[in-house]
Image (cartoon, rainbow, N blue to C red; front, side):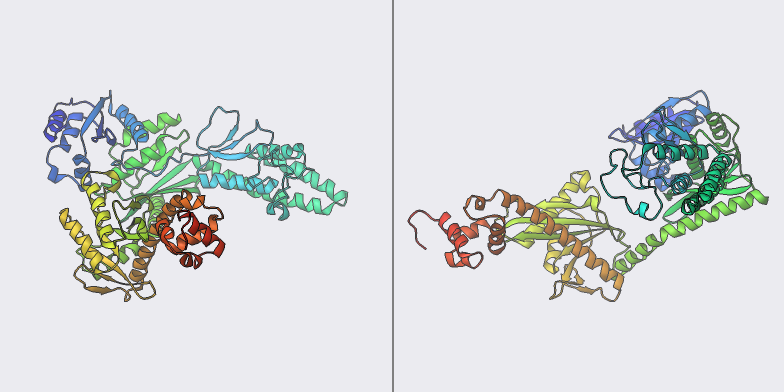
Amino acid sequence: MTFEELKEKGHGLPLKPGVYIMQDAKNEVIYVGKAKALKNRVSQYFADLASHTEKTRAMVSQIDHFDVIIADSEFEALVLECSLIKRHQPKYNILLKDDKGYPYIRLTVQEAYPRFSLANKVAEDGARYFGPYGSRGASQAIIDALRAALRLPVCGKRFPRDIGKERPCLYYRMGQCDGYCRKEMDQSRYRENIDQAVRLLEGKYDEVLSDLSAEMEHAAEELRFEKAAELRDRMRAIELLGKRQKVVAGSLSDTDVVGFHRGEAKSCFVVLHYADGDLAAKDMDLIETPVEEAREDTVSALIKQYYGSRGSLPRQILLPCEIEDEVPVMRMLSEACGHRVSLVTPQRGAKMDLIRLANKNAVEEVERATSREERASKLMEALGRMLGLPRAPRRIEAYDISNTGDTNIVASMTVFVDGRPLKRDYRHFKLRDMEHADDYGSMEQVLTRRFRRYLDGDEKFGALPDLLFIDGGENHARVALRVLEENQLSIPVFGMVKDDRHRTRALVDPAGGEIGIQQIPAVFALVGRIQEETHRFAIEFQRLQQSKQVRGSVLDRIPGVGEKRRTELLRHFKSVKAIRSASLTELEAAVPKHTARAVYDYFRLPGETP
């Protein structure tokens, strides 16, 4: 649809609540939103574009068509919006990295040797489920504590399949496992410990400790002091486990405190779980900072995603800011968990202190996560200043040519974003119609093909670089500049110059101006890393192509020429054509005389003499 058609369709919508679903030309959902009045909300997207945020303008520019679903109320629209966002994961909606959920501890009781694992929800699969708990980290800690207390297997062996196959692992030698992989260990011992684990997860600590205490006293009476000491240590571990599980399991019962911090590159969403007035667990998620998104809109979206699919929720959730759709969100969460959930935005007092603590945690997580990004940003700024660029480059593409004589001519394209390799965007090229090695001609062909693919709309080459690095000197850079000009593209180009020891020395522009890069060690290391990575990628591909050619080589048909001699011949002469025309003396310089004679005779007509 054209922009005017989209605008007209928006004005024709009813003044009713509902959900609108924006889609691009490929029918992919790019944004899902809800509205009290569809006509008013949707028509705004196609009205005054200058008043929109950068994110909204980018989204509108990709809308090809949209659908709407009318709802009976704003609440129904909210529930539908959450469902559609979870299903389609639209790129212009604020999204958490994953749907963590409140986890359960799962025990496969139907198996001969039951095993513990984490699960996001209860399933009808015959397993036993305990929980839910406050976070995956805390739940995993309970499983680890159970294994340690009861000396259950920690390794990846499966029973009874792996019993007696290998010697017991290090965990057994360290006294952290009873060694159920040994032939002399029977299944009943394993089952006894699993039964104890179940009783502990059910909260029957006194019962288990009483049994262990009686067993310890019995061992001491029989003078089995080593066994008694082992049981004593197990009792201590179980006492600690009981305290830990009580805190974690109780983290859902009272209050969650939400914190949010918006950083330059990343933002953080934090949830502190409180039980009986004490901090029990912490959950957090880092997201890309939403472009020009209002703080309350971001918090609202994250709250709906984080809590929307959970069956167990706290009675109270403290928010760092008021959200516009507080009432329908509260109703949605309450109906989902079966009890009233209150959303509270404190302004002062003890609850506000909890919000400050949650926000502080969010700030620290962002600072910890972005320190590396900040270093990368400063590095790219320094590179941009050094090269006289108007702004710091983010995406750098580098190219190199590799060949063995006149054959197997290939090229590599590597991509670095913010100073780090983006390997999913690496590309290989096999040169076409090249009769002999020609670095300049090869580079011209590769760059022409790459940018033609971009101009033709090929998604694999859809991102333009901010900077081009070419392995070579000013002539290589001049070839690249000519290709860009012929395609009416403007991208800075520099050649990566090496010294006599084949190490990166400097950068050079197409006019021959050399830029020393050693005065800033970090920039010098980055350029050297890019050049080495690009060369490595080219060489690997060239060797792969050579090995494919070798496997089907005519040399395989020569008696006495195996893989080793074939490799020696190709390494020395570079091609079968050169081997075919070599003299006997030249062949003997590469391989033993009897092999040289066999090769020489194979390529000569009967009766021909050396």
